[in-house]
Length: 380
Image (cartoon, rainbow, N blue to C red; front, top):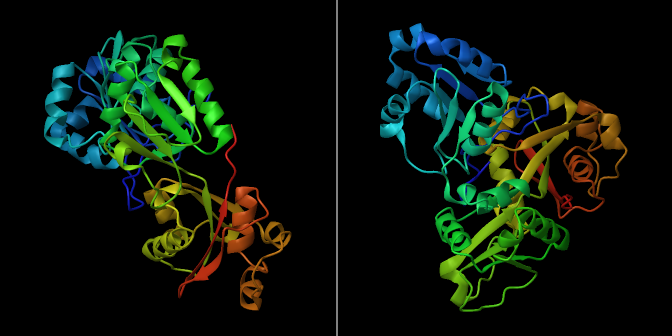
């Protein structure tokens, strides 16, 4: 998922693949639109690849109107797959196109299944990856035209997806990818040595020419010859040296877990407000939120689930016994224990989920929500 700076808002997210061919991603919603009867069977075959999919029949599309269905799917789906001529798809989506950061992935397959085309949101929306996956499953030829893919080079979106990073300044994508296409140099600054080493090896896997484009370092050094800087940092207000600002992209590592305790009926808005307050308190960007953790009796808590769905993050649930196995930093609550069987929820949940023994933010409270933060260590 990609998130726009300053708010935890969902934009489109590419699916995570299993070897079985089913996308193991509860956030990924796919709409398949076979426009003709001859393409209906192919649409059905594609639908079997996904765990959350809406497959329309040609009769339904004719009755409701293709453009009407596409307009509705545009806001509700992460990916839209047309089975028709590419011209039909282009005319259907043209009025809806806004930004690579928000448009869903759009694919077009011909009705005989010879080709699958990545049409829109190839990198950020995951259309390129989806095109390869679908093509492999149905025996089609994938058609991918993005410049870095055509030249066998990594793009910055590939790196961010692989290492769980969020692009803060979306407009800098063009700056960085253009620098990659021009042969660099592109300097990636990251103080996390494990992640930095992983990124260097990932880029090198594309070949010697790709590896020569990038320099990976733990410290920014202003140099006029550098085409683009990529700075990986959780800091809310990082210091970027003035000569570097114009060509610097900020990437946020998703590494903070919010342990959450809440009363029944809490709203997603209040959950988000307290989480953002906690993140601000430790001086990190709201884009660094990795996930939520709480007690298992909150599995059906609508406000929590709505926040998780809208923010595009994961949530873990732990039993009272598991939570009681961790010593809370703050004083335990007799009220919480009486209601849940757990001596505390927010702090131990954050610690267990982040696999650490240290909080970076002890619990803070609103009227109905308690939040604690722990930082998860990056692991390859």
